[in-house]
Length: 521
Image (cartoon, rainbow, N blue to C red; front, side, top):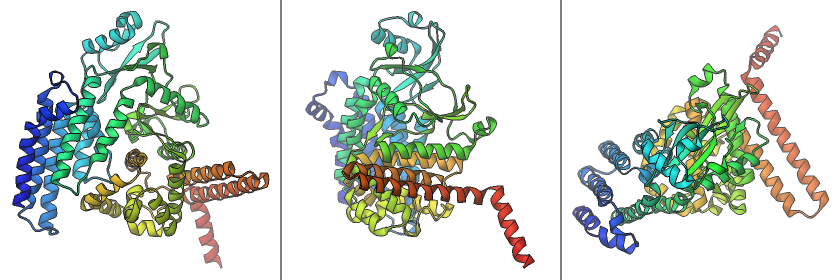
C-alpha cells in the first residue's frame, strides 16, 4: 500500500512537472493553452487518486465498513469531478455529461452527481454570440433578424440556442457555438488522455481510455454544425413514416460550422409527466413511440441518434393535427452501425427476449464480450442474470432488482471497465443511448411495460428478414421469408392485443364474466 501511495505522490508531481513536455509532444502551442485549466485537472486527478488509496488502506476489503467507506470516496470524487467540469467547461462538461448518462455502468454516486451538468452548462454573453454570427455570416444580427432574444432559450456544453424572427416573419432557433470551444477541445482531450494514462498506470484495473478514444472521434463531429444539419435531414427522411416524429427544418443559408439555424418548435421535456397530463398527452403512447423510433434506428437502419437526454427529446400536441408528437433535437452525435455488427446485435436482442442462453453467449462473444458475456447481457438489459435466464420480457422490473443492478455497477467496476475496452467502439454510444432511454422510461414509470420489448421484437424480425432476402437469389425462398416474417409479426401483434385487453377495462370485464360463469357452475 505504501508503494501505491508513493505512486500517487509521484503522479501528482509528474503531472504538473511534465505538462510542458507533454503538451510540446502533442504539438500544442503553450502560448495558446491555459495552464490553469491543466493545473485544475491535474490536481483534481491526483486528489481523487490519493483519496481512494488513503481512505481504503485501513479497512478490510469486502467488509460492510469497506463498502460504506468506498461509497463516501465515490461521492467525494464525483463532486470533485463535477466541480472540475464546471470550472473548465466546454469539452470537460460534455465528457462529464456522458459519464452521468451511464446509469447502469458506473457507481450511482458518480451518475447522480454528474447528471447536474446538464443544467450547469456555460453561457456566453450576447456580445460573444454577436461576434460569432458576424464572423461566420458576415452580417450584424439586426441585418439578419427582425428580433433576436437576448437571453438564450437553452445553454449546453458546446453551444447555446437563441430564439429569433426572420424578416419574412418565420420564428427560428439559432444555435451558436461558444467562442473558445473549437480551439480548446483538442487540447482538453489531450489533457484528459494524459491524465487517464496516469490513472491507469496507478490503478491498472480501471482503464477508461475508451472514454478518450470516443471523445477524440466524436468531438470534431459534434463541433461541426453543418454535419448536425445533414444528420437531422437524414433521420427525418429515414423515419418519415412515423407521423408522430417532428425534426425541425434546417435553414442552410443561415448555417455554418459554428451556427445552425432551424425551425423553432416548442414542447415539454419527454420526462415531464406533469406537462403531459396538463396537455392531455398519453405517457404510455409517448414511451411506446420512443421505443418504436429507436428500435427502427438501431436494428433496421443502423443510424442512431445517441444523445436522447430529456433536453433533446420534447413532446407536444401538434398545432395542425392535435396529435401527440415527439420532437427530436440536437443531431450532432450519431452512431453508424456496420452491417455485421447490426445483425449480431439484432440477433443478440432476439436471444435476450427469448431467454435463449446459447444465443446470448454466441452473439455476445461475436460482439467482443468473450467470457464476460453474462456481465454484457446484464449491462445491455440493466437486468439481473436471474431475470436474463428467466426472460426479460416475461419478468417485470422490480425496485429490488434495480437497486441490485446499481449496486453491482460499483462492485464490478473493474470488470465493466475491461468489458468496455473489449467491445467494438460502436457499442459504447449504444450503451449510453440505452441508459438514457431507460432513464426516461423510469421517470415516466413505463419501464415495467412490455411495449419497448414489442417494438424491439418487430424491428429485429424485420431487420433479419431483410438481410435474409438480400442474400437469397431464389424468388421462392424470398417469398418463404416474407411469409414467415408476416406470420411472426402477426404473432407479435396478437400478443400486443392480448396485453392491451389484459390491461384495459375490457380485460377486467372479461375476467369478471368468467368468474361469474365459474361460480354459476
